[in-house]
Length: 316
Image (tube, rainbow, N blue to C red; front, side, top):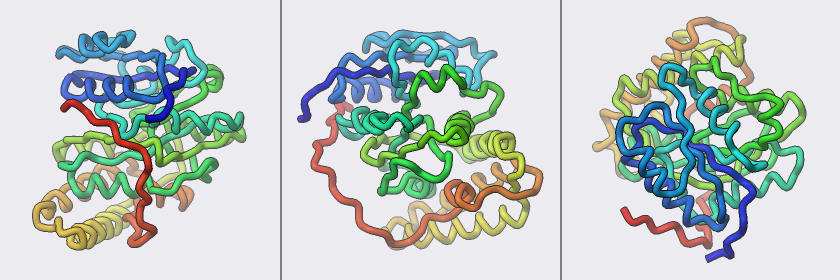
């Protein structure tokens, strides 16, 4: 076990009726190599035991009325209350894999030009195959301390509070408030670091309609952030077919085809149907960013190196 160190960070967690998952995240935070971490839960009207579970772990609760909720506004509520220089942001339905998760996430801030870091995400073992493929596509095994695009994800990220004070999250977006903030930071010469060692498990258990809604609202936000972006019927057909075939190939190679066959088809259809509905207009966006968001996982690559760190052992 690594030596535990005092942290100069606050962690902000957005939650609504997350009693099934939030306990594991909070347990994982308590087992980190960083200690004395301030935990802030931004609750948007939970009616289950989410708040009481968070309080039992010493979290400070910030309430936001459900009618006022947006992803950016809830983060602004939480970051505003934070007492430390660095803000770790996590979804309530994630949990860290290793006890040095936060330590790895915060280490790049030794470089004063780093504005934001984010870490690897993987789905739990029962996750749908296509969802796992998206995680592998968006969060590869190789990291970078200065990535060329503004891509990031606030389910597992950290920022400098002083930069947030200059530019809070956009409260009008239907999603992707993290991408908009990162774009602002990069335009001012700051760096975005991707740290795969800062790994979490992200639990999504969505219906087809839920997948459609998630990608639709994110596409609506993407269009607002990048007004020149497009996603027409040709993109829909081409990318749906390409990703289905990619998933089928990987599933067959991994001996997981038959049990995932139906979900591969409906997940990819709903993903790109939602994306198309969220765009609706045509133009152009940078190829690098389009590839990050949309294109099928590349085959091959180097095998993942095993980390010499014992994973957290959870009670449940």
